[in-house]
Length: 375
Image (cartoon, rainbow, N blue to C red):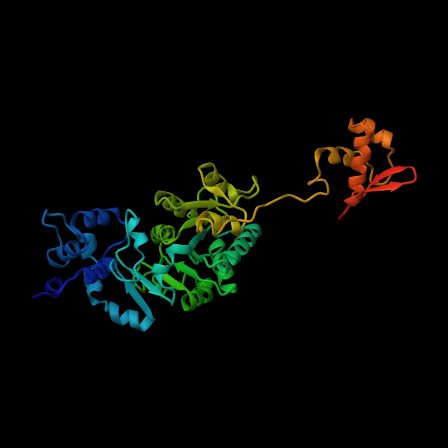
């Protein structure tokens, strides 16, 4: 019996998923359609046995990688990397990813963070690789506070906004997850190797690409759907009109997750994508409190009410304010002058001046009254 034939005889759902992850690409719509029609186990069985479906559809795309897939000892690889492989039905499997139109066949995870605990209280933070100093500063400020509030910061470990988000969470010993386009043992970009290694030590590195798999453009776009699915909401800090970060936003919107965007200068090309998302319905946010209110627990994560500068006259009654506004801060005003200007009667002006004096907002001089600041 051929090796493919013997493997087919012992094939189970878990083994089939691991083989399919090595034989096919999750972004391949042709493979997705076959999985939807036949199921993972049967489809892989056809590829291993005859290389075609019962309907005669040739599975050359899968067969081309068949031998290499069969040679991989995923259990040994996982042990050597200190990683684990999750499939649907495992206790740690994040069921939220099953809502995707193309859910992952399996997930490789490296790091102590349990993946099933991430979606409940987490934020995806995405944006431009070539971000501005403004974008990096805002990202760091927001992510530090989100991590301190107990949110898991999820991003793609790339340059720019991704790296700023991870570093900010790590700076306060927060939890962070990096979703990679290549294998969990393939740090990319190389310049972020130390950052990626640290995420793997204290948080988690996640990929649907088996170890050894190289990052590629289509894999980057495919992994964005995982970032959206693993989180309660997606925050885009800086993004051009054409931006990979906006594909993550699109997936979040399709999953009916929260979509948030940080505004920037209207003249900034790096914020044009954020402004477009806001026009499409994304929630405008400016700080971590507003992000937490949008994606956090109802009633528990309310953002502090923002108010302008508190002024001396804010809490005055209408008559007191009318008198106070006609007093000069550096020169005196007579009672008659205040009466004429305010439109109040003499007794009303005198009563108001007395109250203002008690409040420390007015001062009587030899030739009249002067405004006084209480602060």
